[in-house]
Image 1 (cartoon, helix red, strand yellow):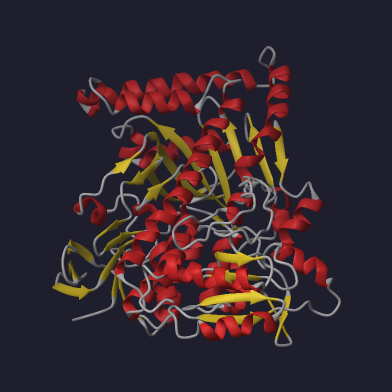
Image 2 (image 1 turned 180 degrees about the vertical axis):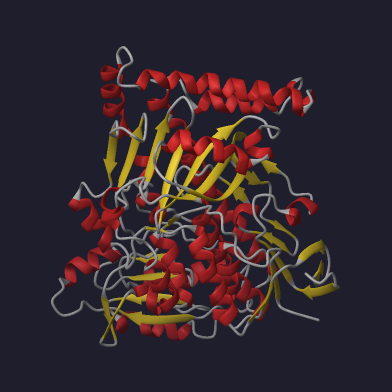
Length: 595
């Protein structure tokens, strides 16, 4: 049995990789150990950039997923509570700045959406099931992967216990944070463990009214300190930290939460749906490529949940890799092109990790006022994993760990309305809440990350500042091509909609100045498609040209993944020669036949 690409793991990264490869005519075998999507929610923040990437495969798919998100005016509050029965101590209203919202809406056809992964994954599984170029096998246990020479070999066992083997030129490890494929390849992770987290997924029809359900609620009570996430259909997930795997929350989660939820929710009704645990880390694999094995998503990098970068970065991994795999498999490029996957993605995911960790510990600006901080939690968690504490039997250390957790949470009694100084403390916390904005608004990182590799030209202009909150569209090499409504051959489109999935695309407002250049490069690989832009009727042409930053006669060269490779501000002989030189010196080492 032979297939071009084997993908291990049908999460967001694996399904996206399969879909993007199918768009390019590449068959894949998608192997998944589960027989049905995980019901217990994980990620819930779907960035607009992620929806843009799914739109490349199918606009219908992207629109159907975006439609799952509740209206933004229903998920606009981030709140802090001392007790869910009382009023919020303070809140951040994500829609409080209409001008900022209007700017964000102009930067993409999509907005950040809030969709539980338990709702998202059935949609992605349906999409891969409907794609004839994807063979999707559920209930598969991968037993070994060999990727050192020739075609890679993957041995697996089906849900019925039958053994099988498949060969292919490349294997994509998308099997999550605890990737057995990564571990078997001897690829290490670097970075700290920050916390052990337990969670309960439940339904409650009385907890919040429909028109006033905070998207996120941080709770500080003596019985539980944690974060509550609102999902559709009056469903919620409540997360809290624990110190040792022998504690009841990890050993018997249902029993723990059946006792704890009534204390946290008070008189509100609830139905416990499921429970789970996970380890919060900030870890990155030492390499994203091991010969014919490539790591994507959580198998390559793990972040704290604070910022919502995990799922989205896995989709971006697939987006960066798909067109490169296509070029290699078609023979247009050599396998060295795949090395640029690590080169380009690593600095980006490290930036995401840095921001996620900063968000996690920035929460201490609030927690320290109660005496409960993530810094303290990280130290205690790491101590539990080291000698001498990790040598103590679980039955002995678990009560100590539980008692230490209760002692810390007891400090939140200072927030009770009848506690001395409570009014002043609540006012102090309310004043600190607006400083948490970077945690929840990261449009700058969502769109503004820059790639840097030999596939990206050096530019003499000043490199844009990569802000966390605010995104400023730019065609600086390495950046995502800005979104706009433009006229191409009389059709109103976004520039992203006309990108060639296999070739480079040269955008210009002056086709006559660049047509001869593109014609002269037509025999080179990967090939260049010329797209002549114009302003739609009723839009300011000068304003549109300023968005592309290359004037009336300049040009912007864009890769299949929508990232700018090169640009010139005019069409002089020097500028045109610069394009040819860039391809012949920087792309030629990867592409056969590049001039």
